[in-house]
Length: 444
Ligand code: NCW
Ligand code: CA
Image 1 (tube, helix red, strand yellow):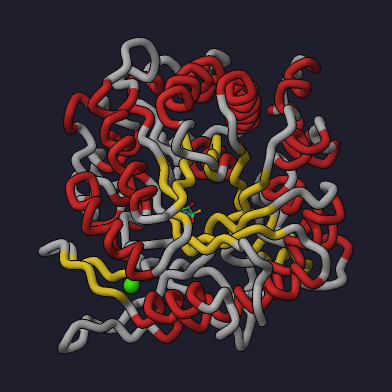
Image 2 (cartoon, helix red, strand yellow):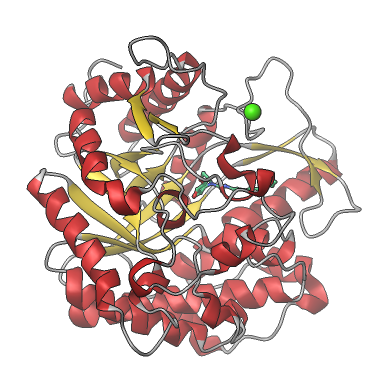
């Protein structure tokens, strides 16, 4: 079971989830700093104040990446470290941090893959309306351009946004994530401005960058719970909402009618020319895949009129996500056929499990995580055989880290972090993944 030559093996993290020191060296606070410091919003009152202390321990973390044999490392840049107010005066110390990180990654033979936005909007911009403000697309392009000019000589793979759907749904509709709004009328506006921001950053990149830039979306295939018409209709709506709200505009330059109808009065009239900006061609698509969704109609809920009936016999992870590797194959084939087979990277895939404690001598026997990864990687091999243009895979996550509103209670890492002393321990899944990389998947 060998993968194609040049298939890229990596692991991923995000700035606010691992760095700690969120205000160090002149950085401006983000909406996640505010959210975590608002009592009652995050499990256990956890914050990113220390997190994995990666801001100070990054050399040790690069040593861990070497141990895993990573060929690429996907991380995100904290906008507020670079531009404390979000726009205007740059903070050179913030860029220095990422410059040093990138230089040492290259020194270690690890290709950096940088994401510009993994949810940590500068709080100063939230004060100006955040993603609800139409100017947010220009703010983002200004920030992106600054980073490109400083780092594009060394970073050859860029991502504009991580999971814009989650930003919209969690940040502005369910309110479970920063900035914690719950407003049906805001959601489509935020989605649209995120898409415009993405498009403007890609255009800025064409002007100053020399390598590749893409978008990362979370995709979750939908299957009806029964043959009943209402379940089938609900499945279509759930699919349009979660999987096509961002993909259709980027790849086809339009919003789907199902989506527009779902939002009804909450759907504003957008200028048609915005779609031309949004569909600016990208070089690759990043897909984050974790689970599927079995859809049962629940007309009382909006805009996702669905329930997720528990599947008997299935394994669920600690975030409540069903383990369903076949869904990854279905998703890749859906992208291949609907969107013209773009170059794809799996930019996140992984599982939170309650790992056993660190054993004597330093080991974590996390067999469930290894199982999860193995099953999903096997499916990738099939997707390639079926014609998907799949270029690489990033496990989520290098380290246990701050799982947003779940705080530190959910562990996704290949490496265990003891938050009492910041000690890192390679889990069994990490040692296993190192063998997968070393054999280019042959040992699967
Ligand atoms: S969508 C999501 N995740 C995880 C996160 O660690 C990563 O940064 C994301 O790209 C794994 O992959 C994505 N997490 C959703 C968190 C929702 C939390 C809601 C908590 C309610 C109490
Ligand atoms: Ca638990």
